[in-house]
Image (cartoon, rainbow, N blue to C red; front, side):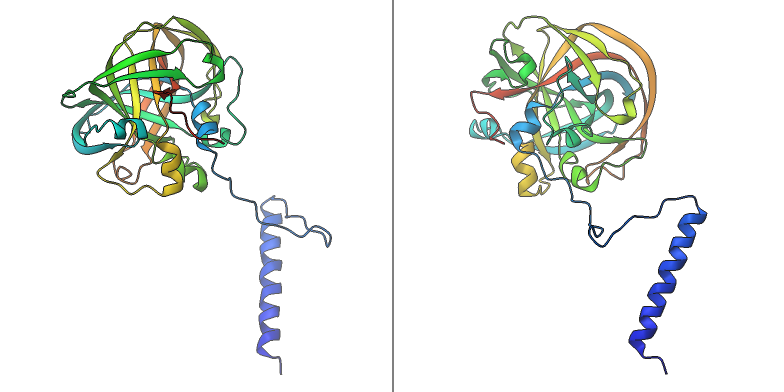
Length: 309
């Protein structure tokens, strides 16, 4: 009589043999293993540090059209500088989609290696919002964080009124890896119209980082100093953000510079799907990326920079 343990071993061997046969029949390679190098689980990507993530985050914005959401959400600021200024929680109404912003490298300089697997999945859909103007407009001193623009002078913005809310999206139903999704799903940026100081015009060469947009050719974009927006991190409807994720996204401050002239590129059709848990039930939105109109670049506020690494 065969013992229950022996029967279990027999079932495991038979099951493994059947699985191997199915893989071979399907034309798939069998995993290799040797006595000296047993198979090991693939290590999950470690979260990047705030500095490496934020300094490498550049987003090129395309004009896109989409239906109005007509949703009212409450927003609260995450950045320590704006929290210290006492900017209150407030409500905005999300209207139509106006821009889609996707990750790029500038002048051939890639993001830091630890941050690159995360940055390539930061896609934002920017909706026009209706909101009240700030009762007191804070004046903020900004400095470029990305090494490519580090030689440009500091500049100032006075925040006036929210104009857009940029929310995280995926493309074509392809989800980021789970450890990447944990981070990018909480990047919500509220973009303010500003009364801004002078800033020199600058030209950069851009290349797409997201693999789905690899067919968009590299190109140059010339950016002007006005009118600019400052896009700052916010949380929607008191959503709970894990502490390790909050420690990164609270430093994502991006200055949006308009293009001196829109750049026409070969059109790419994509379908956007929302990633933030509050919005995942919203319908997918087909858009066409063909007119590049702005670039969002990382900045620090009032001398407070993202902590290393």
